Image 1 (cartoon, rainbow, N blue to C red):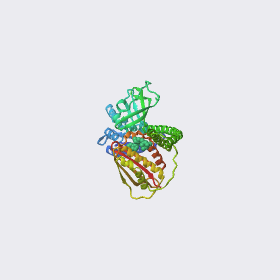
Image 2 (tube, helix red, strand yellow; image 1 turned 90 degrees about the vertical axis):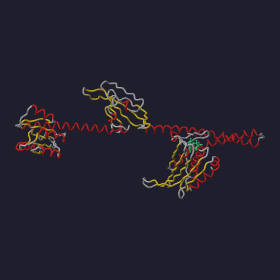
Image 3 (cartoon, rainbow, N blue to C red; image 1 turned 30 degrees about the vertical axis):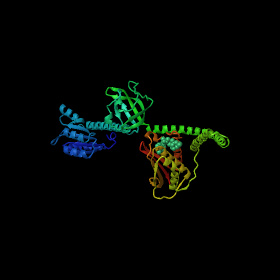
Image 4 (tube, rainbow, N blue to C red; image 1 turned 180 degrees about the vertical axis):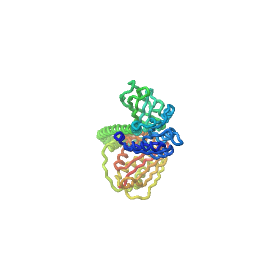
Length: 488
Ligand SMILES: Nc1ncnc2c1ncn2[C@@H]1O[C@H](COP(=O)(O)OP(=O)(O)OP(=O)(O)O)[C@@H](O)[C@H]1O
Ligand SMILES: [Mg+2]
């Protein structure tokens, strides 16, 4: 027995005969077991409440109590304890009763010590097997539960047999609400094409599907679903089932789309820059020619108007060419100390005529005086000019443009960082939610005569100042452009 029970085994003997208790104690002590003995059912229950016993041997007839009933109570307290009933007169009825109460076996008095040893050993083996099974079950359940992908197991009729924790979190549901239902009932995704090919399930891994889903719980999402056939155990053997591994690809997809868009824009930018460069020379010749004709040729009023038209067209083409080249050309910095309030005043002064013509009231809400800031004043002015111009364009029937400044402090990084914040708020037409993200895309414009480069250039400039430029807008209410630049 010593070799067969290497781990610490706790045994409890419950018998009102002290002699039997003594004999059994000696027998199992020798085998290296921890042995406790008690004479009454009440003492046995009190002890089981404090300490775990692998095996309890209990006499059916105890003083004032029925051993089988005591065993039932012990099993209630400690279900993994194996019970062995000892009886002086085994009847079929008492044996059945004992087994129904969860006894592992029963022994008949007078006890044969070899038999006792063998039965206890079997009970220990049974305990060991059950413990291993339980550990394995817990282990598998933990893996399934904590796997970061959503997991659904379906039977051959595509009913959900199991939904793991990640699936429930992904779809804001519970296993109880999911298991037992069909996949179509619970999985709010279009285009899911499931089929079973092998009658008993195999290890066939179908290629993944990218599926879109829109529900009030999840919003707009993109999921990657891969399916694999598995054999599912049933009472009559095995049948085919399916495992669905579901991953949320929404963010990845968004980044991929952004990357593709950025690559497209980079190519477009380069091509546009090359074209712009090529346009400049003939444009210059047209301009010079038109100016020459206007000055020296004897032309009438109609011809003079045509020449004016040519020169206006050239000016406007030149602006486009300059902006495209500005966008495509790497930005060179020339930072110096700038009084930001002076700079904003300058921008508003230069735009005064436009603002007044559009009947726009300007409000300034400058923060308490702060020192000069270290930026490229020329480029920051360019950013603010475009923002003000956009504000004017957004308020053709008048409105209000507010420019506010403040210094905020960003904590959390190694050293706190002071940040200059300039907010331009207009009461104009606003931007639809679906278009806010496109405001910084080069060549995105909603204006007849716009180029769509103002905000793209502004973002490049602010990025190079290690700052950020944000847009908040509501259609019909107005737009806020927030420019943040760290002060160093
Ligand atoms: N304050 C604003 N209110 C409403 N829409 C705006 C505002 N600012 C920007 N937008 C939207 O963003 C688009 C892009 O602006 P951006 O300044 O880059 O280009 P643009 O003004 O159209 O042309 P340009 O290159 O001449 O500046 C605009 O066409 C407009 O639809
Ligand atoms: Mg603009």
